[in-house]
Amino acid sequence: MQRVYEPGDLLEAEMLIGMLAAEGVDAHLAGRHLIGAIGELPMGGLLGLMVADRQVERARALIADYNAARPMAGGEPDSYPGELIC
Image (tube, rainbow, N blue to C red; front, side):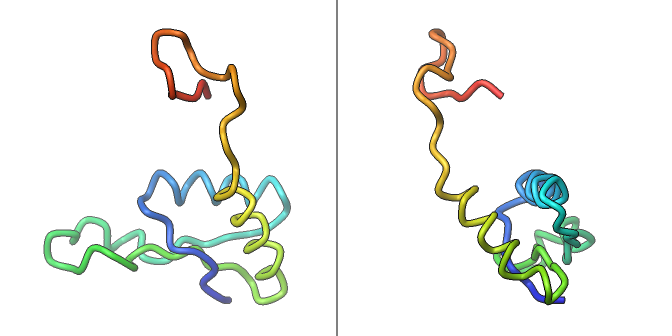
């Protein structure tokens, strides 16, 4: 297994795990159990998405596409400009 991405928080990690699973890539979240100790541990690098060696390139490509995505015009409510409707 290799670490392919460091999510910013648990919410992003869970979303990426779901996205990867939908694309046939099995991912494991390393460091989930360390989140409770955030006051005593350094902030960065606690979480890491891990995938099997054979799926590393596919996972990195999918995550790169995720990071490059931009909201579509018109996908936001009038009352909250700049907010994406999910």
